[in-house]
Length: 76
Image (cartoon, rainbow, N blue to C red; front, side, top):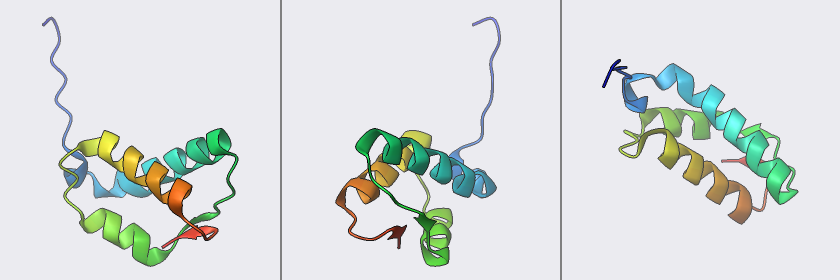
């Protein structure tokens, strides 16, 4: 432990959530060959309210699941 880096939890950085979600959305769509345009305002608000105990990895998994199981071009 030469350098300790303190990083607040995702629930303390809610302004980062839309940017991270968009990044993961693009990544998953490219890998899966799916075409999802983005998130509804309600979906973004729900993601920002959720406490994300699993932090960024949990957010990534939720986005991947939504893309793979969704039937719309917008995640609601």
